[in-house]
Image (cartoon, rainbow, N blue to C red; front, side):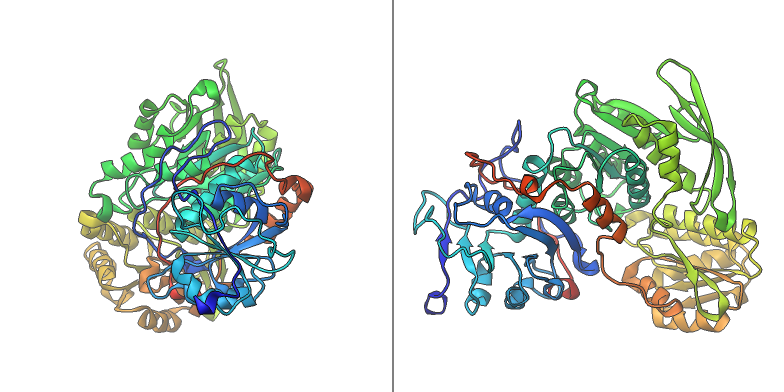
Length: 600
């Protein structure tokens, strides 16, 4: 205790035992589960609209004391190197290091608040942070409720909690329920592939009329979604949030946090098959979003891909209004006459069957790469339809897509063009990427060859061999040259050889370093180089060797920041205290690993 005497400690009762809600509550604690992945690989660094008052209420269950300043905590970070004055630093344990070891650096860097677990006290001993101990259970004791007279206008408040991830979720759900307008309408987006692209394009559509918030980057997990929720404020009228999963029950938890009224499922495929065992179980996990929606009379709407039988069947699992999109005239919104224009985008005709039975038709040309992007466009348009936008607004939003969404096409070495699609990989997404390579090569009038650099696809379970064979077979019909990476990549190269691609056109590399050497040697001016595969075998590092350096961390984009500021209401309204309101904290808990880079 000697080393902590300078710390002004305040012990607070009401640990993660209760519920909260604007009109209802989250009953009982969520189970704390083991981490599923290293979210902080991209070093999340997000703009927030929480205040010291909000965080105090969320984590202590008490009305903030009069001496506590309501100053804003404008950013939330998991890496002490990203701390700036007034930021919130969350210390999380990763697979390689523990963020608690960097609490001192975060406080020295000007953090306005720190969330940490009890072992973080050792690293707070040499700081002047005010420690708020949220781990006490039972009746108030050790000075609980005492006014923190040392809670100065400046300085850091360190919240010591039973579980940092649980506390982050408690803060996120508090912001969602108590620091947003009651009529905020949230759209949740999930699916085996296409989640991020659909989320981005749907937000672009909604932004044509509404002040819209969207989760940035890959903030779609039990740790990432709460970070996205911290970016909400009272000016937002709509939000589009991506929801990922590694196991059953996870999307249900995300829905408890985000409270979506609209749910969109893009497709169901064998991604995460190793964890869930069967594609039907993957469909069951994705359907949790649809099952969580309110009924149609309360504004619930389920936007479902008609072309995917498992997704189409989800309409029977909800009382929300179903709305189908796809390439079939049996859907409510469908497209035909799809034409790829290479680097110039795509063109198609869409049809919308309205409630009176009349069909609205529209010819659309969009700056999206590849014919498969029509599914993304239809899904985003469906979000606009369900939210009551006009077709002029919907088309304007589609045409103002943010860049090329996740996909990046950029000049590379030796005069080649590099298609960077290394975010993740599954058989479906890799086949779509190969189709894009084919589209751009043929319809874009490329003078050079089509080179596919394909790596391992992970977590496919019993579908591992078959999935890689399917990709190899298709690569043989598309690529002029094939470079594979990793042991599973050899299945791709073997299948491509058996499918007729000449042996001299196939290169099997055991690691990304060898693959880089091969690609640098074989590329020529005018070539199109597709890089696709799991980051576990370094596919993103291949891209970094082939193109100019890219920013390696997930930050809110300038466009997102501009939109946030444009719809922000006065700070005093965003940061107002809930007078007389003393909610208990919700026990929302899950642990997700972070890597060494992201926990420092």
